Amino acid sequence: MITNAFLTSFFFLQATPPVKQSTTTPTTTPAESQSLFDLITGSSASGQVVIGILSLLSIYAVYIIVERYLTLSRAGQVDQNFMNSIRNSVENGNLQAAKALCQSVDAPMARMVEKGLDRIGKPLDDINKSIENVGNLELLKLEKNLSTLASISGIAPMIGLLGTVVGLIIAFQAMANAEGAITAKTLSDGIYHALTATAFGLFVSIIAMAGYNLLVSKLDQVIFKMENTAMQFMDLLQEPSR
Image (tube, rainbow, N blue to C red; front, side, top):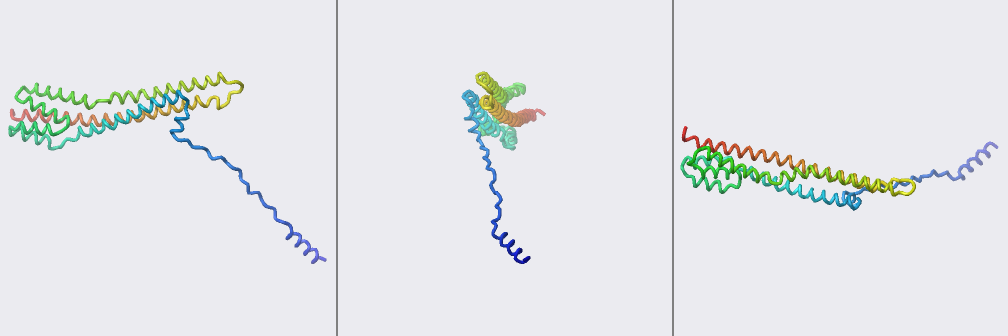
């Protein structure tokens, strides 16, 4: 009896199908990523105008940075033996060779020395003033567009702020014209416009400011070399009288 009951229970358990656990997992929708171009084109019409102006300013700022950096780099590349060669030519009385050497070097220092060579025979004060005048003219050439770059670094955040104000106006206008409950969609366009303009304005300003500081540092190096060259030339002219 016990054996028959055990066998009956065993076959009943074998015949019962196992309960399957649900393996269904909730599906999640991946978040959509947007590129910078999508962020710009997704703004309102007035926002695209602001960003377009900032884009033009950024292109111009990059052009100034690259062009001035190359110019200042060339201006500071003067052979260390340049003044030694000038000294040897002047001491030997060969002023034409010294002038030819200055003309072969495309640098502010060479043009300053050439002007000083043209004034040899005149009082030292006159020679010094002539060199300073040439140096001032060369300095104006080297500083070209630096003030424009500084202006861009200051104007870009203001244009971005203007876009921000316009975006807030759009948002509040949408609130005023909304019928019924105000939803996030009602305010999204204006806020989207405002934040995009602010971010882009700051981005352009950072590029312009960093480039301006870099160029000013390069310019200071060139000015130091110009002053050092002028001092060495004046010392050279005073040596025979010692």
